[in-house]
Length: 290
Image (cartoon, rainbow, N blue to C red; front, side):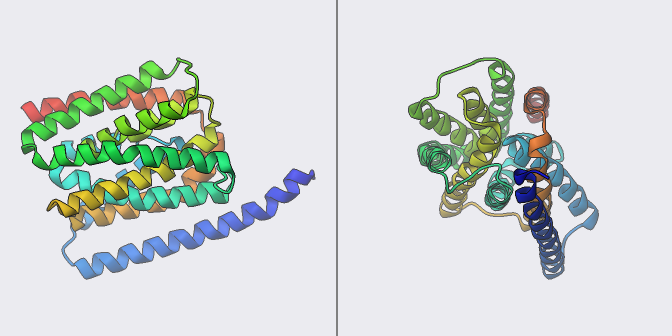
């Protein structure tokens, strides 16, 4: 056994125990919260939990896909954008911070390292302007206009993921700030679109793949914190019947996705997410106009 293998063995055992404890804790908290709430439709809740588990599994493994896929899916299931966006933001705040923790635990990213931490801080700081503008727009737009707008943003995000997949650009801090502003605006308006832009931008700028995923999780959680705070301050609300299964499904998937990052073909899945996102954008716009 090599020196690296010897170092990895106890880390894998520790990670497995941490992951198991996490799953038991999240499952117990969801069961308790559902019992206290007392008005959940359990079939719907299990459907939402499973949907969020898959979306967060993709998101924590690729740094993209949770809100981008989940928001149009919830719209197609009949939920309203004014319920969806703040609820998705809050659930992703929890799952994003959790994903950053697990990515750091398994050494996909090292936030004790100056470069990784600096990149995360730059992205989080650049998100302040974009998410603020997006929240004010989302709160003041009529429901039908917002739903169509969400569809357009999602559609554009999908095109960007596909078209940027084969382009090479030089890394600059100011480009990351600009990217964070645009991506966080998308996030505040639609609940999605942040990860595809930020993760792709980092990958195409030369940031290591595993580090870019962990960095995106941390930065996106900070963006969600700002967005949720502004939504609530402006009179928004959190739909608990939606939030409980969303957060439980997302949190349960985090240990699995962080572990699977090293085995993921990011290029193929990124293009697949882009194509799926384009389709969901078209369907969302069609449903809003129907």
